[in-house]
Length: 449
Image 1 (cartoon, rainbow, N blue to C red):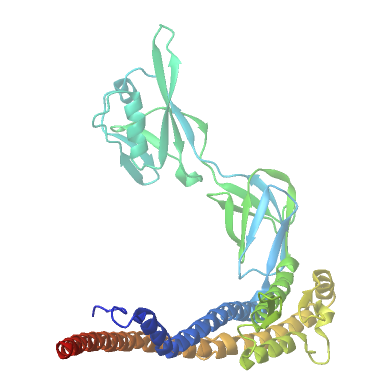
Image 2: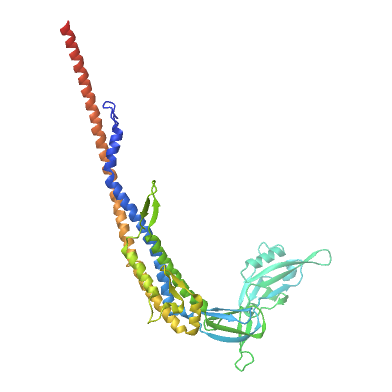
């Protein structure tokens, strides 16, 4: 409805209506403030929940017996390396490296025309074991086309052209054929029709070979088509890169660095979770325009569940295990509530009594995991449930805030009608007053005359 803003009354009716609407909006604004506050709380809870869930994951890993079976392999020769699998066990093995695996490299005799190479016989085929691959010679017009056709064939052999002077001012060619895979079973031959094309072998396809326990009655030769000997020992893949005449010793031992990582990761994740709680519950101080201090509480400062979680995590990481302090394996709590991991102390304790260290760290990890999982479980976690509950409230508040828009729109329209009617009524009264004034004036004039 169009407003008549004080045309008759002289009042700023637009400002009056806006002032009245500001009062009407107060309930909606209060709902908005509550929604904003809850949104900030959910964001803080989600950030904390992420860190607590990560802590639970690391704690569960540190508590698993399989995590304590970590092994590493060291070799006496730089040319020998090993990958340790989950099924490996601590051991030591000695062997010599007799041969490394190689792929075949062969060259054709010199030729100037393709027919000279094939003798005019077809088809041209590459044979590798029982596999026979025919070379598609469609559109092959020169030696470069022939090399490209071999490369496209999928025979497991790559071809390249070697150009040499033919001694008569022209050019002759040789094809270098290289096997793409190593191993004796990757040897190949080239055939034109039923005849084998003569090849000069620059490098034969061969298996890698090592001799276990060389120089002893137990010596044993082992071969591999590649330079990796899979499961040479259970769970141990050994890779060689050159011949080693002197025996190579490969030791598989407990991976102390990996085990120390279990402890350091647990402490680091514990500190992150506690640090997030401290950040979200800490008060902040600012000043107003007059310089007076203003203290604002942290988003989660009034959340008793979060404060209790902090206490439970500190206890889980610091309480004794069977009368022994976690500090014995390098885990200590500081005066500010954070934890410190002493890797040197942990490693020394591990070397002196690995079973005790495993037992203590496992117990700490299990306690931490229990607390962290109870808080962060995707369904039953206390933090998860708070987030879900607050999300529902936020959704409800958003709906209520939206419904207020309609209410306020109707209220504004009503006020605008009321003030418009007032202006109209005043206008009519003014008109009547003017009419009466003119009538009165006329009567007074007629009386005088």
